[in-house]
Image 1 (tube, rainbow, N blue to C red):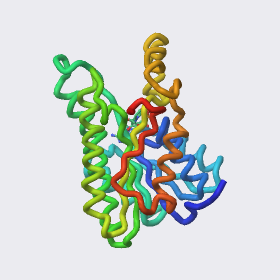
Image 2 (cartoon, protein in one colour; image 1 turned 90 degrees about the horizontal axis):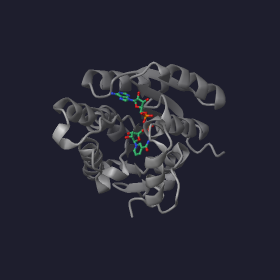
Image 3 (cartoon, rainbow, N blue to C red; image 1 turned 135 degrees about the vertical axis):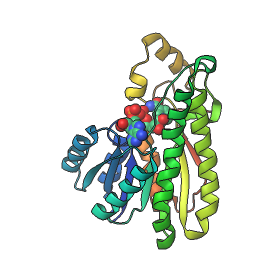
Length: 248
Ligand code: NAI
């Protein structure tokens, strides 16, 4: 595998498991030093697993990225341990599904806080350094439901659609400083988030996907790593769908 990200430092939020773990693994395999920032201690064993399966250092930093002081501290700790951050992947996300009429304010706030505000806080914390160094790439993990909407996910869809607006605005703000900002919008991906689906729901979902299958976390990781590196040096403000055609 090419080591085109050697000497690069990447921070992946929510990298303890699922899509974030696949992203951290591929970044490390491509030579980057990776900081996993996650709210669960499970990130520690993920980091040691990835360090032993790749030749790159992968370290874990415990933080709730929806809290400004914790987000800033995590960025400072990653930079102290691994060096200035070249790539930020805002992947941490949660769902609190329910129809709007029965959705609690708390469910709305929690989903917006992690999925949208977390990306704002983390981006702000890394941006000063990136702008100063005239180099950086930020990738936000949105979702097909941020583009199409989904009954029962008004909070999550709003956050994921918000991330697309955030991506495009920030891309315009920092393009002149050679900092690129893009989004990846996955469709249904095989992770803990989708494992809970019963067989019937699963079959219905697959029936809606033109490629006829649920995606793998590795497919999202490939898109992220592409956007992170020099192959995407002329790409900013884009939203790359990795959804088997679901969003067509
Ligand atoms: P997951 O639930 O398996 O992993 C999410 C990770 O984020 C966990 O390790 C969790 O501890 C961490 N996290 C949650 N809140 C946090 C916080 N406040 N601070 C730091 N870390 C936090 O989720 P999955 O499926 O891997 O999803 C990753 C991203 O991809 C999310 O943004 C999700 O919305 C998005 N996505 C997932 C899809 C899927 O089908 N699984 C489809 C489209 C988008």
